[in-house]
Length: 80
Image (cartoon, rainbow, N blue to C red; front, side, top):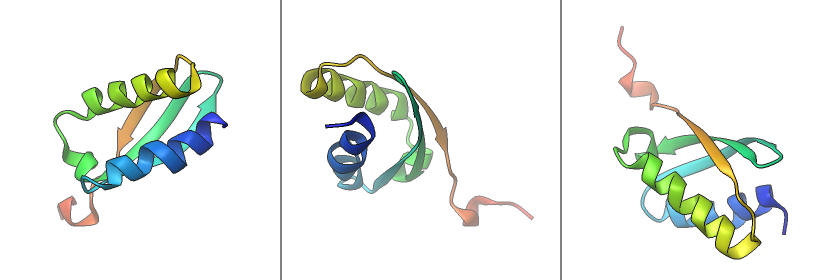
């Protein structure tokens, strides 16, 4: 299974179970950039969660990856 497919089809649904959302923005070798949305956009343990995703990839795909994440805040957090 390709890394992007794994993140989209295996890891992301587990995160959605907690009200979050993970969108894969880019995969460049072992560097992955994702966007966190929903509950993940304000979560204080997002770094730990991404470390968990890396551990899942290591276990299931036998690959070492690095995840950089950005948060997408909900539109109603914008101030006028």
